[in-house]
Length: 612
Image (cartoon, rainbow, N blue to C red; front, side, top):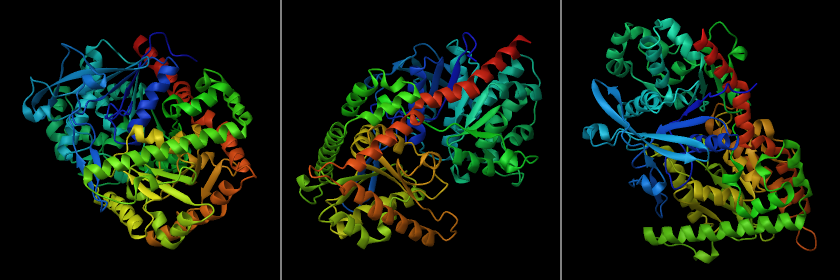
């Protein structure tokens, strides 16, 4: 089936990682949203993106000599990052009785328009201008205001632009209030009652959940919801209890916080998780919403994430792909990816060596700049990292469940890995911890101080201010991408996908996308004691398993060379991983899944509904 003629999909997300120059993202959720738009453009999908423009973006990270993270905010000039204001177009959103004006800035992502909403307008009061100031900063009220602007303001802005989407795709519950605005429209413009309006809105809505843990879900105190929606309820002739029931999680007290994910589940016709294991976790986590169903029957399926190959593949590797797959290499049919098996060892190894060298030089440059800025010192810059050593990358948001410090569980084994005379290993770490997450920030400090204390800071480095530019360097230059989350707390974990397109191999706990893709010939699985309830015991077991895989499998394979220094068996695994995984990891496959399984049925249903 195809989309009906003229159909449009609206994709609403609190963050979009389109490029490092446009810092409107904090991590994987936003980068995934950016890749979603790019893949939709490649498929010529009639999609429009809607988000918020944060005048200070996310924060800039500096890390001092003691490993302390310092967060600073910078102003983002819209024009300097390629945004054009949508002139003379304003909508209003009621914020606790105040009329807040909302404008829009437009970016073009290939064929896809992206509208970023802002309240930083002269016709708003100072307190309202700062609603869209920072991404994921501020308290509960501030976050609620941002989500009102994104959800309600997003739907109204699309209408003001003359865009009437057939399908609304909510990228996490942050955009959930869009459904309430659509309910209001159905009741006031189409004359539907409350129950029928809910049924109508559900048909055209898809909700994608990204968190496998209850703590990751947005919740608001019911008094805040009542304060901001009492007039809304009165205008529609419903009670606040009827509204609050939409976000009430079954099994919790009547006055429990309003759950944005639960509301989004109830107001969406379909829900998906972002990996198969994540879907199983989500069915269990949200089972109470469907009390009549067994957890395995809860209607949450999976569309495993993908990444945009053109964004994340280094130019040197792009040249390899073009030689072996053709100029349109990202869009070849899946069987064509097996052309990777024909890449000669010499060509693949020289490319991989060049990318590793580029990584080393870029990291040295960044560390030198950080030293100058912070007034710190350390080993000579030109001694940091070795362009020929096995390079393992760990770069992602620094949250405790991702366990960036797992290698510190056995310092002696870490030292032996790094200082091995014949086959040394080096580690590159990067990532931001949320400014309100002291435990995540402590992980950074633990790593930095341990490297200094153990005298391995020339081979275990932390690179500050992780962004899309640094990510491109790391996923291209690292030989191995390491991932050690507490299973099953990694919803998907797309950074390792990007490494595959560059000839990198994954070494990971069987979580997220790796759980459905790992095989012995494409990378390494770290056995996880996920059923161990005692955190220190679990981490000790998993740490031992990580070292064992590195010592007994990864390092020996990389060190196995012929007389000319060529690691034939390593390169065979690289070729197999690229041939078997790239077709699945491509965001084009992800977009095809969304289109066939969700967008087309929802759009057809929406058209049929309007024709009745």
